[in-house]
Image (cartoon, rainbow, N blue to C red; front, side, top):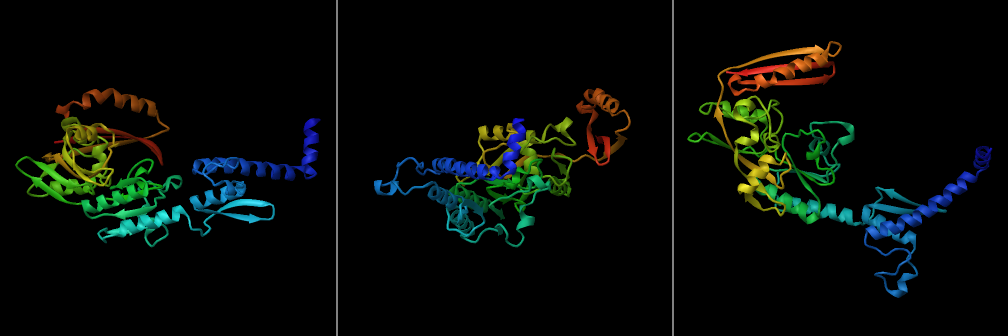
Amino acid sequence: ASCCKTANLFRQGEILRALAMIAFIFVVLLSGHIAAAAGMPDPGSCAGLPSDECAVVEPSALLQLSAARSGAAVVAGRNTLRVEENVEVSDARTNSSASLEECLRAGGSMQLIYMPNAAGWNDARQCANRRADIIPTPLAVVQVARGEDVQRAVKCTAQAGVQACAKSGSHGYDNAAGCSGGVQIDLRDLLGFKVDMSTKKVTFGTGHTNGQLYYKLSQDPYRLLFPGGTVSGVGASGLILGCGRGLTTFTRGLACDSLTSFEYVDAQGELQTADEDMLWMAKGGGGQFPGMVTQMTLQAYDMPQEVHESSCQFPVDLNTHNVISKWLSHCDEMEKPNRKIYTELSWWSRPQSVEVTIKCVG
């Protein structure tokens, strides 16, 4: 019976008045929290204000100040108080974005700088994973051509108080390289390359993908290989910093095991050569290295003469559990270095199937 009475009251219009009262209370309470977070006085406090101004600090005024700091505007209407986004106001965020762009463009050394809504912006900010819920929303995208460009970009982000993220091959499950809320630094044009044939060490810019590095090393007079990944479009530097597994892992170890030295830009925008501690951090950090690597030196190895591959695909309506169990039961034997075998199992969703691949390196 009480539920029926409540419903009757709401149908008679009481719900509108109740919601209006709740909204008013919410705005008053919220404004106090926003003010505290923004370093402004609470509506019931005079902290930081001259005594003659204390009486005029109303919740609406605090909300106005908070909105100005967050890039929104307060629009007052009859018995309403709402915050609207994308209203043209002079606020700290707009000024900060303008300052960031000015800093990035100073000196004119950058290859390309993309700001939101500018021509080429949508393509520039994208990563390989085009899932709609993780499309990157950086403040800017900077395409660099030299290590000095990386330094300037990092210094500008530090000055603006935002994060900087490196993007090379653009791969990553969660699109972390997209750098939402920060500055995406695109390294794709850092393509320096040289080989010391006396030591078979290769020094290269971190814009290379696996495929680019494989190809250059395979050419005469080098005929070399590095223990990288199996997908040509993945960034080589990201794979190496994440340890990296590939065709020659069982004979040459993980990709990071062959890393001998590198250069990186630190959080202050200074170019550094890795010492022993930083080298070991890069080898074991799982990709979480506290700097932006611009150049790497790897130990390379003689390129194999032959690679044989066999691949079998099993629809999921078969006994896939048995397929996986059988594959796992042979892994101990297949991973022995003398076998020179690389194997992987992939579970595909379209069409639903399990694929087993075995490659033999001759």
